[in-house]
Image (cartoon, rainbow, N blue to C red):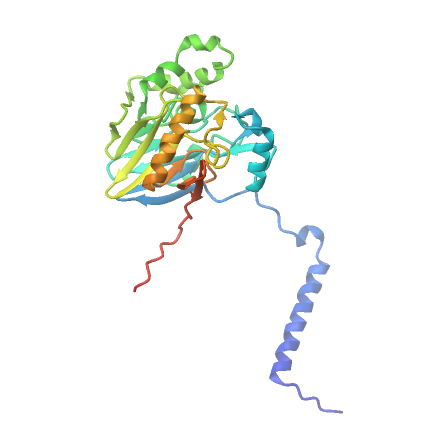
Length: 336
């Protein structure tokens, strides 16, 4: 019998080949049901935290809000211009989808939520109304919210305050809102107007249960310590943004000063169909954009792609949005 000498290297390679063949053979022998893994329907929980000076912000999603064919909501811009702007940015041409990015601000003494999403309304489909679930995933009990600071009373900003039976989702919260918006959107007479009926009915459903717990916002004044109101009418009569400041750090919560990171930002003179006064809304948008870009203030845009936290810079006749990278691990600065 001939003696065969096998080196250690060849032995290892042979073993690996045998194991590979065995594994492959095992998989081939399995039935189809045993071989494939089921696809998961779960995604990562939608909350994200970052500091603003001594404050802590947690962005929580209420879910995506599809508006449908872009030209139905974007005005003063041609379909061809819309298609090119979307195509150039690798975005779908058949539907504009907005996000709903809400901030929970922990100041150390108060817990304040900015706006409240769509709530029980399915006006824009089944993808909205996720706020309460995402708050809980973020470890935030709705009963611990001290303040809900509302930028305006549209359905996707005050819709998550109460259920259809008038039960408050934030039982211990004070609601902050401009009086002009409160009066406009809770006016019972507007229920007879087909164009505003759904918005008014939903505003009444969500705001009236908090009667006695509503404080009206004053332009230029602090809503709570560290949060200053800035009136920017146009989108609604009392539309308000908020400048959050702690120490040397600031953040502008821009609410609905813009709805789209391309169509209403790079082309800021485009009008939006849901604006109460589109011309005034454009004036307010340009004013806020100039402030953010010239002072290099970070911003949180309610409807921008998740999580909507980033910066604006002037670009030609418009502005360019730059998303802030999400930071899940704090990387210390390198020593010189």
